[in-house]
Figure 1 (cartoon, one colour):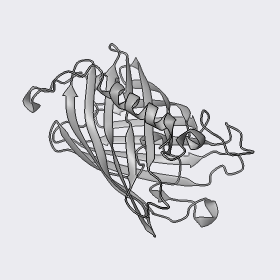
Figure 2 (tube, helix red, strand yellow):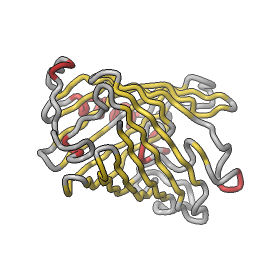
Figure 3 (tube, one colour):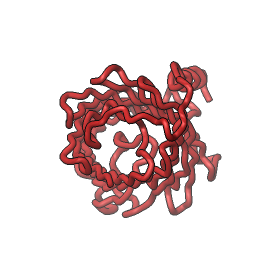
Length: 276
């Protein structure tokens, strides 16, 4: 791990924990908003409440230079609130979630269209709520990812997710995780994932997002990290349905390979959220 990584990682974890108030008992967890599910989203927490089943489907489309439409992929995630503290999910979009590049889950464009395989990854994701405050929600966050089936490649991501509420109309969510390679460690690197979501409530049913973050191998991070920058919008249609879209430059602020422009990598993602 290089000097930059040793400096940035403790700072990120401390930032996640800053201002944390004592956690409250499950029976006392307050609903931050009494609006219908999906509305006033910046006032809500990080996890589904007890008994809620949610499905999230992302259609991701590569818009990169010379490879537009290659690949196109469909990533379904399903989460269940076992309790107000514990959420368990089956995921396909990985630790960068909505900012993941196209190709995860069901890859629809074939081997000639940027897909190594039709289906080649899946994971189990676990969140455990630690802090339920009026200004801060904090959860321990981890899981187990099968990042490829053949050869079988596994990763253990561990970290914390934090959502800082800035009044009634804005929130910042950070989700730093360290992904530890569990297979063929001489080939597969440990990776830092840090998605950042800055959300603004522009109407009771509508949230505008600025999306950025960092992702890169711990070994040589300063020379290889990627940093996306994008915008997104999520709109609540009913208590059970949200739709959204985001456009991102997938590595606008990161390190670029020789001959590659910072704006060359870009993607579009369409989102459908379902709750029951």
